Image (cartoon, rainbow, N blue to C red; front, side):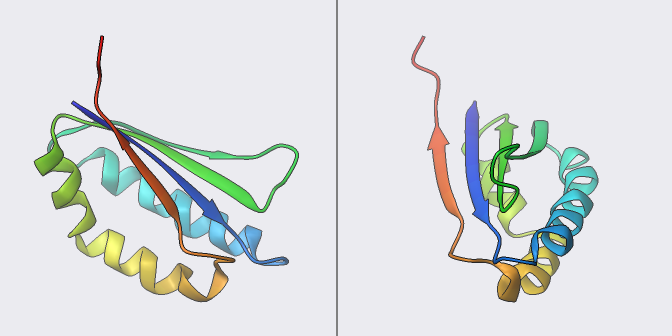
Length: 95
């Protein structure tokens, strides 16, 4: 199993647009083979900050996710809205 936590930061005044792009990514991602869960959150204190918490059956499923058309489309739409490149952490269970 692989858990991915991605931090996505919006430019000022772009959070609403970015939130919609990220929301549109949730459904297709949840329907991918190997996706155990895919959640999107927005920081209550800083609405420019989002995180996704993704749980994948294995590394291959997570890698396939990054190669999907819906991820490519989201990256294309979101690129100019981002304050910085997303920070992505991959975790594997230890206990």
